[in-house]
Image (cartoon, rainbow, N blue to C red; front, side):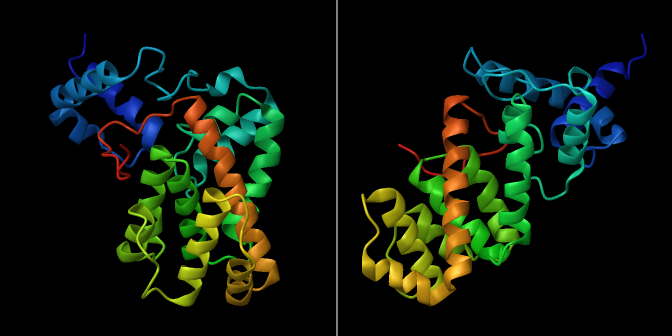
Length: 240
């Protein structure tokens, strides 16, 4: 047997899960032993009902299992550079329900990439929701996305560690207060609502709240199917 075969298998697996740019065949050849050991260690660390390929309680969806319409959805998801987790995450879980995937995909595309919400505030709204639900997978991937979108670590840490909003700009402070009351209390006060409305206006505020609701649904999905972080990814949300 060709000695490079295990290397190519490891590289192909990582490429499938995280994109072809993660590791080159040459680098995989040089690090094959370490990669195999790291993968074995990761698999051993998982709860017994977790599928290693998907990192959750359902096996990773395979393209060959899908009909022609769903193959188009699959291809669009795996080739979309804006998709944070590809099919190894909530999209892979939702793909078990074809109708949900189609509807959800359109709504997600609008709220995250086409709405009046700035990319920076998209990520802040998602982080607020992830924090409220202690959603480790959602938080960790979106903290990294938030930094890339220009969200300062100082603002992220206010949410992460439940710090006061004093000193933040008005939009950030208003959004954080709104998120905390939306998820942490039975009602949003008139004062908090008025502050958020003044900061964002009617259209953007409606879209922000819809985005937080969508993110909450994602958090419930990830909790139920016990989605694990990718191999080697340190958790960024402190959860007791």
